[in-house]
Image 1 (cartoon, one colour):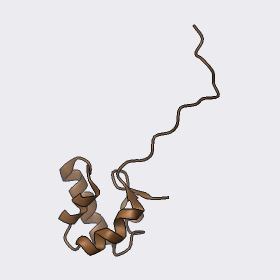
Image 2 (image 1 turned 120 degrees about the vertical axis):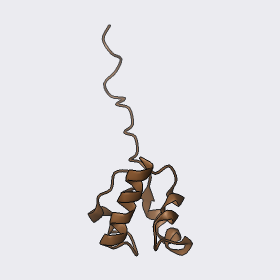
Image 3 (image 1 turned 90 degrees about the vertical axis):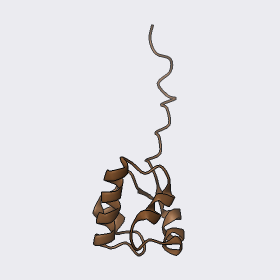
Length: 79
């Protein structure tokens, strides 16, 4: 699975290439300041993450967890 930027812990972020504990903590600090990430490119604001690093990280992350599909097996709701 991919790392969810808006919910990831320091440990989860360190699974990304080039992200150690200090950089993961900087990502969480930025997320706190922003409220949440709206674009993956916001990671460029973290010291030590440049365009080359971002190109390696971007395919491995998503901003938010995927929405669960609606339960289609339950049938219509009772009246």
